Amino acid sequence: MVKRKELKDNDVEMSGTDPRDIDMVNVDFEWFDPQPIDFHGLKNLLRQLFDNDAQIFDMSALADLILSQPLLGSTVKVDGPESDPYAFLTVLNLQEHKDKPAIKDLTTYLHRKATSTPSLAPLAQLLSQTPVPPIGLILTERLINMPVEIVPPMYTMLQEEIAWAIKDKEPYNFSHYLLVSKTYEEVESKLDNEESRPQKKKKKAGGQAAERFFFHPEDEVLEQHAVCSGSIEYTHKQDDGHSDSKRAFQELGIRTKGSLILFEAGRLEGAVQGMKEYVQPSV
Image 1 (tube, one colour):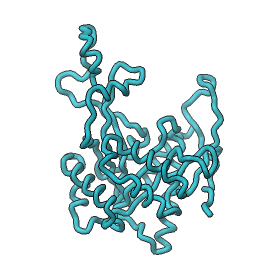
Image 2 (cartoon, helix red, strand yellow):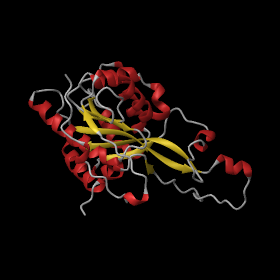
Image 3 (tube, rainbow, N blue to C red):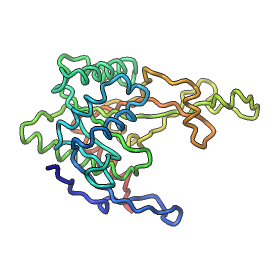
Image 4 (cartoon, rainbow, N blue to C red):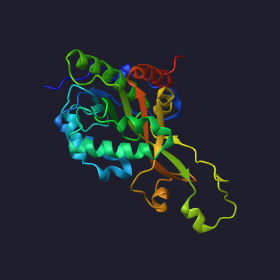
């Protein structure tokens, strides 16, 4: 029987919001171990995480692999254990599962992207080794309107569960952790160009690199503790119209990219502590 995680919604402090400025909606967040009923919800969140390149991978196999280790990782739900997860976090051992087709495809993809991204050279070197070192691949995603405050508890639980697994001689003694995430950059609207509005000027003039923005704000803190990090171009790119479809009441469109963050295993604890301080700063 799957146990409920020992954490309640009132253990998470929501900060930075004045309740007088918004309409309040009471939501009870509950943390659970991954369970078979989460299969379709996990697939949907994995597709969201890998964005344009989700079609490259066998999402069913990845979801099954996550569910095969039910005592490692968490899901977050609001309507009890039978409901779909609104967020999840887990870790997969790239060395232990190296012969599984889904992990083979994913490792090849990550190596190719790291090799073509100068800032990710240390990751490319690691993934070039035979066999691949015991790298813990962290996969995590949440619905877009989920508060960032739910994230630190998931990482804290994961650290505890990894420590318990190592004591039980299970294969979770990692040399590194690799986090897969997403970033985006703002792009000049195709619609504005077609309308030829002379008063609109390009904000990224002179060939300057576009500014990176984080879908997951905690990633900005995690990168400060990383061996290396960087955004990667998706293999399957969308046309300009797709960027405009994501304007969401703003002047510019957005172009999504993948993001990879590599940690030495010993630095994860400090990274998580930094994330906690960023998300829930002391008053």
